[in-house]
Image (cartoon, rainbow over all chains, first blue to last red):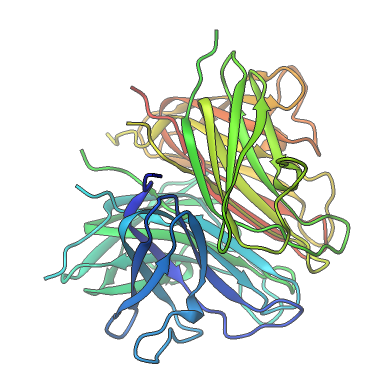
Length: 125
Length: 125
Length: 125
Length: 125
């Protein structure tokens, strides 16, 4: 049995899906999650905006002893996804501890730009 | 009622507003803040320089359950903003816990460059 | 005698070896490790995937009072390396405390893209 | 009187001074330090390499209530600086708490690449 490692609650304040792509790669963001444990992790995403109510309870599963690099454009709730070209923020809650990193590839111009950071862990008290 | 999460005091040592832009996007920095709570957050920015006194008490509001991606070029104090092309550092104090990330888009050249990092949280003691 | 500093267990959820390179630099990732101590550090890597079993126990040594910028493409287990163009995650365990940072250079397009973040430390309890 | 904030000991495992520049900006790294206090901070850098002894005791001052964005190429010890094109790691010790971020601009190609991360704080015990 492998143990779950990390935290159950993570925040990424700077979300943004670039509306344009050029060159050979498509602009996208990934929420990269590692589940080190022998049990499946159930993730619950909340998306916060600048000017409207949050989108809540988008679910995603990370199998035991697997990573998932989740495209934010793939997250859906009742058929609706995150709008492109709009500043937003991401909250990830997991039923077991996981580790979360956020990366963005921007190919608005033909040459790519990359950024990455660990999500901010909210310690359970 | 949703609870405030994060920290009340954050630091970003590497601030710099690129003076030049080219291509389809404008060079800029964003201080991205998430307020998870049911109450409004009042932010107080202090800007530190290499060779002059700090600019203090630039204020900004983040509404309840909202994110704000604050362009540093929008911060004002008595009509004065942060000068471009000058190294500086950012201190963010909030009256309730929030989460803060810093990102920069540099389009000095036509093709973009991106960087991002979580701000450094100063734990309240 | 210099003391070991940092943590013994680090996680990098967003691993990816870009399959293509162009321009004057080659796409690559580096796991950058600092061993501040007077003793050698023995690292043990586990690589997690989205759709297959982890690759375990790839070993690497960081000599006393040295840094190593380890190309992920150099990690081997029984003659097999990490496949390119596949999302994965990295776990680093060390027998003594070290500090770990992850960086990626993507030269899929002729102009480079860079990203970097500290690995996430799992505190020993 | 303003209080010193942050930590006294910081690590950056991924140091590298790009040997080449092109376009309108010069490749460089900056160690960005904020001193929030009313007293001057005295920094002591140690540079670690992959294959030779560390360079120790490069000193730098950050005045009270100021930031310094220190080019790594400006650090000197007995007239010798950090060699370019060589992987290295950075240790920063300060006599009072400060906050440290690391950024690199790579203009090996004409279009720039940027990366940034907070340095890793070693908590005093």
